[in-house]
Image (cartoon, rainbow, N blue to C red; front, side, top):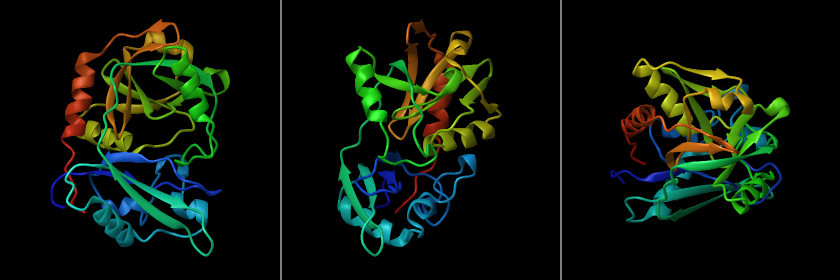
Length: 249
């Protein structure tokens, strides 16, 4: 389809089972579905090759996406990769697009996803998300040793620090929306950097946000710390994300 659609980025599951997904408005180069590195951060290899020892046929994935979409012009597409006899199996599903609720209230959880640079389901992050929601929060923010912040269970987290955007310097998924924002912010002359951010540092920053293929959301609370809403910064991020050109499949 020539019209914009929401697409899912392929992830890899080393030990079988259905994958997590990243539903996104796919910009840039569709080859990122497997012909190039899915994850650029932390020196990670192509996620499919790292998990299964083989690459991914990008054209076949595109054909599966086109088949799943049919006449649908806007959808959230999940591309699942399973471990299977012979070679990995690929399944594509499509559903109505969804947006991330904003603002978000986060509860900290001392947990680090295994193989954090890959999106996969061999992880306990869902447990911590459900625990946070039972306590009245929207999601959990994952922290490692010494309270170093890495990501939420569903999104990347970023911080406003003066005129700059700070991303955690910690094991995490280098999400596509994060990558797009880094690129677009650089084109606008807005500095962004990786920084070690600990829980106790958050109160001294100018605000926080989550970003994923479901959009961008303000973070107003982390545990018992209330954060200011950086309206100007959030508007800048929204404009940068909206400026990304659409791909046709």
